[in-house]
Picture 1: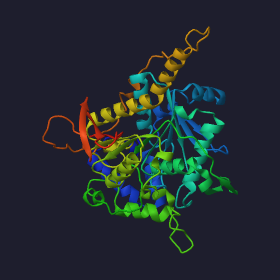
Picture 2: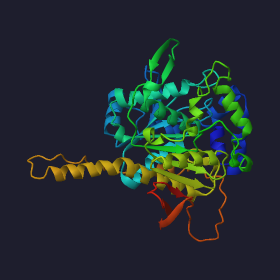
Picture 3: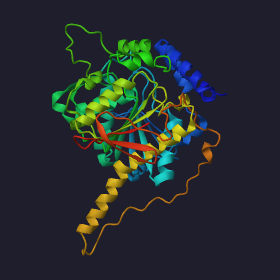
Picture 4: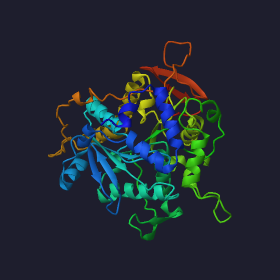
Length: 436
């Protein structure tokens, strides 16, 4: 029997947007039933899933090629030899979602890395407790512990880790990075998943190699211009935002300090972004309501010294993961290429530079460490023939020009390479790159 998810892939992107819009407005129990059916993994996905039950550290699952039948030791070996670990947090408004809700998108990301750069990557997709049963900051607590488990229990070098999340998942990752860069400032109340309670100070954790955000939720305010102009195009609207805020955050009282809901207040910072954010790639839709807030956040971070790249496409919310809302296949190919290039530059490239530097410094020594052998296992893409990923609500931008153009304020020098435009600030070297 085909699930609603199968049907959703076959409807026009505009219809998919309407289904998602109505689904997010349903009462929580009904919304979970709907989205669990829409996002239920298909039979062919199973070989890519290694489920992890609550183990006093985290729960969710690993996503990787042919890992479903591995035993514990086999899975640990795969983790140890992976070139890249993508630490993923799902979206869903804090009230919906599971670790395997975007299997098509996750598998595609792993495949493009393998095909383009022969990179062996795994996704650690962590779950968190959901609202309204669990209020803020339960999701952040769970993700802090999951990231701690990855670094300190599984002993994964953070230089091999990229944090990645969409929508509210991106929001949780941002707060996780914020809290763990200076844990002395924060005390978190840990509600044990099995019922007990214990107080703990958030651990100090190293930053990952880089960060990938898709349509990040960075504020609880809904007053920016894009909230007005893009509501008719997006599946997120004012009613959705109110439901998310009401269900996850405690109602303000005189006893609750103004900064109690830190999660959606990070964007209010005027400085300090460079202290907790690594090099960042952000995907945002020109037709989504969160566009302006996300771009403002990116601008502040970039001005504070964060190396930041922004990709803007004429799409609705979280199109990087929710690919059913993308109409133009070329957009998906483009963002996959940008994603793969970013991963290679921020993880694989630096590793190769270290090896070359070490060999030059060690010239003349009797023994020199060899580079790890590339996995030469052949890649078979036939599995995608019947399960192609659907396209998106995309409208063509008319810039009255033939080439793709990037736009950035306070820029004086524009250089275009393979339809990408990098913008440099005239007063200081700017790291922001905007792809349109």
